[in-house]
Length: 215
Image 1: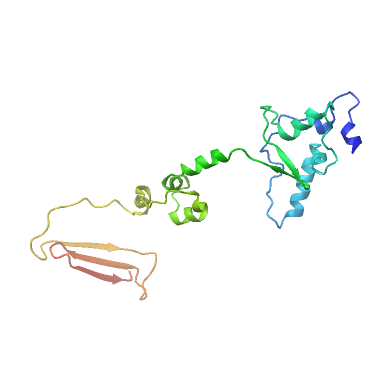
Image 2 (image 1 turned 120 degrees about the horizontal axis):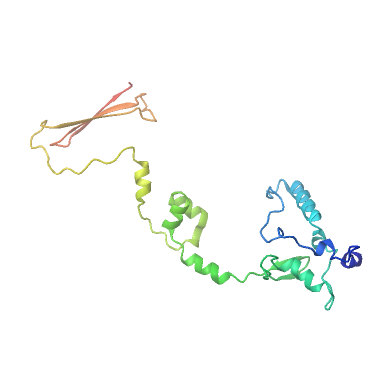
């Protein structure tokens, strides 16, 4: 363990495990495939190889402990673990509990503000106009406003054609004007095997007659 902490190159440079490149940033992906439980062995091998290639495995297995106060590499050790190289800003502080470091976030207030401003209709639009039932199953109680408002885009998308214009005039006698319309072929057939139907509506009485047809 002491050999790892004190190792230096022949040119007097920092040891490789203390060096950071411009690509070593928080949020970078070490492996291309995520951990799914069943692929743990493959994922563990890929992560281990990635950390070894970056000379950072010594931080994980404990072979490189934090240098004592006053050590020339103390500040470098902290920078490698808790600081973003590009911005030089501290990204967090972890407390050792057992064999794990627990990261304590300080953004709870920001998260709370974001939750209170969530609106169901905004999420509905951003997620491709998914049904409200799906939104409830995804976000649960994080959405504070569950008002059910009709979405014009959803209604228009489900229509096959534009609606007919509103007409105020109406026939005074039966059979003065009859509306005929043929529908089909419908995606689901009736129990008798019909996929077309003819609608007949009298303009005066509003009586309706439907005739089904196979062809």
